[in-house]
Amino acid sequence: MLIKVPKASDCHESDVTPESIYLSRRNVLSVAVTGLAVSGLPRWAAADDVARYADVEPGKAPVWFSEKLSSVKWGAVVVKDEAITPFKDATHYNNFYEFGTDKGDPAANAGTLKTEPWSVVVDGEVGKPGRYALEDFMKPYQLEERIYRLRCVEAWSMVIPWIGFPLSALLKEVEPTSKARFIRFETLQDPKSMPGQRSGFALIDWPYIEGLRLDEAMSPLAILAVGMYGRVLPNQNGAPLRLVVPWKYGFKSIKSIVRISLVGEQPKTTWQSIAADEYGFYANVNPTVDHPRWTQARERRLPSGLFKPNVRDTQLFNGYSEEVASLYTGLDLRKNY
Ligand code: MTE
Image (tube, rainbow, N blue to C red; front, side):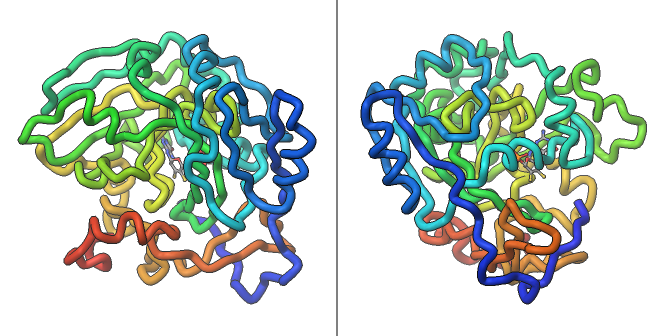
């Protein structure tokens, strides 16, 4: 993960992310809501409404998703005064090494990922282990829209409207035992549909693995996402089920999850195994702890052009200090990066 970070001084005052995304409703309020949305991020809620974003291609959603869409709690968490990243950027500038290492590879190649049927294994230190068909796995949960900043360790960022449910709700369902101290996630391993896993040059020892401390996983901000921009997750964004932990660098937000294990020991995670001095287990967004090869003090908010970079200061915990700083009281964030 090596990229060139433009200097903040390259940024011009006129470089603002276009507010190209706005909401409309199926019902008669569409004109009024659209008007409201251009002056800032809207809050919205109405049981029979479906959020629609202007530039979004509709996805082919499974029945369980379409049924749940009618009761989504829209705008449950929003980001004030920051524009949502256009759908096109969020779906064509991706990291999903199973489909290639270039930013455009996931959009070009992830069509081969078969997301139906899909099953998720829950195992390890839990009272209720099992293998669940995704539609059964999803049954207990009410979906919410969470608009979160996403900050990649490579120093680019976006604002994404996810649809998902709190990870804490899953933990309540599966009943971790007293021995559970960490949660470990595993991505699908299927070289037939994932060309990156067939490549002899891949750095990664597949499958992709991520993990959280159990108290981090219980944070109300941590979610499992099944959709974004009012629709089902596109394959390149980690369909059909991915983690989203917005105060951590994006590599923690593991895609296309097939196994969730409660464990006693800190799991060995993918990027930590590749370069432990560059990518830590915690990976909390921190502008004062640089990556050995580049600064983490600033970020490029996409869309951002080469000649007109849209650069902003990075915030501690990606702007979510109030919600998560207490998880790290007494922990040296320089050592535990
Ligand atoms: N999950 C898997 N399985 N494989 C990956 O390569 N890349 C990570 C994370 N999850 C990755 C993954 C990285 S580095 C980032 S920044 C985010 O996904 C990017 O998410 P996005 O493409 O939806 O923006």
